[in-house]
Amino acid sequence: MKKSDFGSLNIDTNDEILTQMLNKALEAKNNAYVKYSGFPIGVSILTKDGNVVTGFNIENASYSLTICAERAAFASFLTQGYKTTNIDKILVVGDVDAPISPCGACREFMSEFIHDNVEIILVGKKDKIKTSINELLPHRFTEQFKGN
Ligand SMILES: [Zn+2]
Image (cartoon, rainbow, N blue to C red; front, top):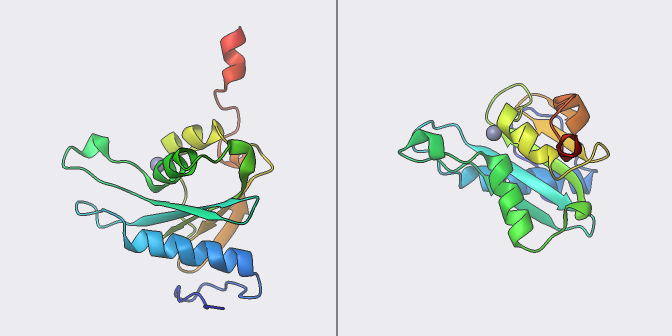
């Protein structure tokens, strides 16, 4: 098993799934297109059948067209034919000490596709936390309001 080389972060390498998700997210992060910010982010989405789909942030000279890693990962996940009911866990990693946290737009975007039982693992160089979409975005806008 390949051990994570991510700084001083205490990742339990006996947790093979977490290690695999982290290594794939780190690999994605290393390919991020961040020529303007220099702030790469990697994401991995674990499917219930054990596959990992990744994404990274993609910047643009017209800054507002930038796509965050979370949304890029979901676009890849969906275009590969996966159904949202097949999401087990999501991991987000960035080059900061504290656990990286999805922006507000990505929280709303992800909430379209995941339920509260999907574990979201936020990883920084020195710490990680496990959370959920309900913790990240309580009282969010959902399709239920469209019926009113
Ligand atoms: Zn975002």
